[in-house]
Amino acid sequence: MRITSSVMLWTLSGTFEQRLQTAAKAGMQSVELVAEYANWSEADLTRTRRLTESFGLTTDALLATPDWTKRPVSMVDPGQRENFLSDVRNAIRIAQKLYVPQIILMSGNAIPGRTYDEQFATWLKGDCQN
Image (cartoon, rainbow, N blue to C red; front, side):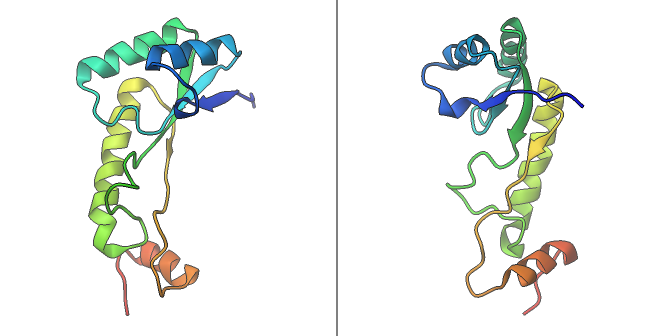
């Protein structure tokens, strides 16, 4: 097993290219994307993959729900499940195009009035029972 150093690009300042350069200069082997990719075109995906590789970097993960703070998306709230699944499908598509081996899943915000066990059971069942 190999340990890879990685950085979430949003934590660095500058343009996307400058952030990649900073990561490479710092000795990182890989980067992670959070919301950077959300509005990229097919051409942007290709350009970004090549640019990342030109710095000797790989992208090891991307967040499946890049705008989770701006809209309802949750894996534990049945009313938001389709948004979550749609985001996951899109993240898988993007990950394949960028050669990213894994996606990061966040459960979303807790549902007020429901215990952790109830929320977890909701995800396992695929629905919510009162």
